[in-house]
Length: 208
Length: 248
Image (cartoon, rainbow over the protein chains, first blue to last red):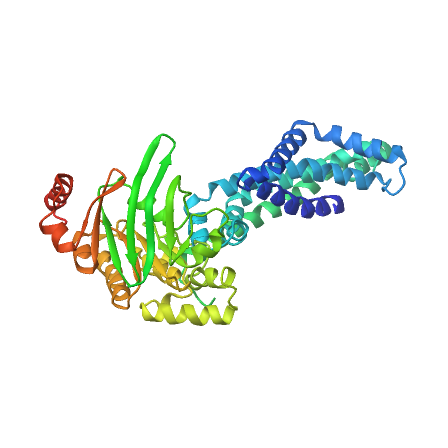
């Protein structure tokens, strides 16, 4: 659970950064745009479990000075790398769905490209992509189970251990229930967020 | 009379389509000039070029003595001095009216929240929008939205105001309230370049009228002359169609 929360917080920020980089205009930013695209293509293409194995087994075994050798750390890094790629695409779709006239209005006031993104485009984009962002949250939450391949004691792994101890299959059911118990409240929470935003925009203002 | 805007041999293409084919235009300080012409004649593109929302292909634009189309000009600084109001309002739907109006002064001019709010409240009150300050744009009528958009542009205290068919998206009964605001601004000496289909309004408010046709200013003159005795055949044709549509 802690893996999931830590990873999620980092992903939300870095993915937005990546999406912003891809929106930067002009030939000056061409190299960073290409890097961002290559990154997204690569980490969306490689199976998550491969990345976890490569980093989780590979990095600690290098025994380099100055880098952490914790498997949990590298598993979290792997999840961040993979999901940042997915989530940045979600953000990018959101940014592109905001009509260019909104950016034109902001720029016409003398705001810079980044100010326009920050105050006008991204707030609208994020509201629109909350449901697909939740999809990726849930995917991430489930993929934390993959970390168990590294021998990290994690929800699914713990279940297998218990199972082996007393030969009782209901542990899998319990594990599944635990996962759903987290995702369902999250889903209802996002629905609530979206509904509240819609209500606020259509209601007469009551105080600022 | 001080010259506010000087446009010289302006060319602009979108792909193979040449939208502006050599525009020459001058605007004195406090002058109101109306651009008329059919859809696609280049009125909107001209306004967007003046505000540097579209890069120009050739030609020069000089604003109050500064060539703003010169390389290396800070476009954000230039745009702070030029207001533009769009046909579709383009208010920010996720912000209250007050936040819409104060965004530019706060972020582009660096005003404090208090100073920006004070400026916005003054303007909103002047244009009968005081009660709407905390509403979101979706809740307002088209006329109110467009007046908010005008206030948003005015809050930057621009030297020049560009109006791009600001009544074209409005229901007929809402047009008057917006035109009234523009008349008031003209009375106060605001320098304005107005693209419009409201010929009656253009005749009233404009010091000069320019007829755009296929990317050039085909005819230019006093409103009385353009509307009652147009010289060019194309101008006559255009005005004839407007009369037939009952718009003049």
